Image 1 (cartoon, rainbow, N blue to C red):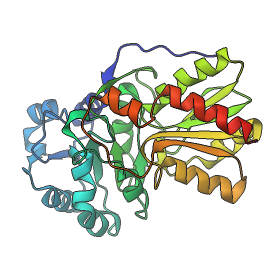
Image 2 (cartoon, helix red, strand yellow):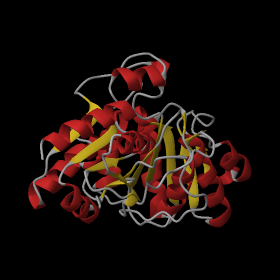
Image 3 (cartoon, rainbow, N blue to C red):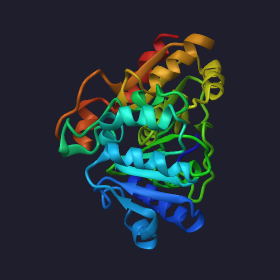
Length: 317
């Protein structure tokens, strides 16, 4: 069984900051806009190196999206930065009309997604943002799993023509994918091979899926783990090929089961290859205040929950 090593836990928002810093050096058309959260989004270095290409708009997220859309007209590649809650729900009308409908080349970069911003509580936690963004025609939705992959994804989306939603988080999580990797939008990554169950995960739940696969291996269960970093466009072939071997699937995400990765996978399977599926996701609920670890435990978003879901879905084959 192939295993992966955590080379040192890092926050994925710092991966975004590192990628943006590199883009600042290599692509003069990249500009950055922030809604009064420069430190939280790790945009400090880009601002220091390229003050003429950085725009601090203050707590005016709708204005930020409008400015970003306008900057694309002159050939710029704007990266907007604020919390996921404010990057999507607060400015959905502006994104829909000025970015998605108009097919503007705006990169909407969102930190503090999901439950794991922790103690800030339910009003700042967002568990419906993937659904909001994937429903917009032409919007690419990316949710990388660790620091290295977030850095690579940030660099890759600058070359992609069209609107992108890039989602990442606040806490330090396992960093286990290769440094200086090539990020291919829309291409799933098979991390382990298996014959009994497929685990499809996104974001930092990918590490939890790998931990679950080790526990399952000790029980004599062979799990195939797939990293779905791009939720839209979804790599349907990778999913169908895997379940053709295993006969069942578990999806894992830090998001509401309504509208998230699991729902996209379920549609794929219903259309092409009906397969038993279990969902690791929040169950149509808001979050609450607590440490990230406490919240992941309470809402069933960890390796233990994935193991139980795998045991359940295997019985349904």
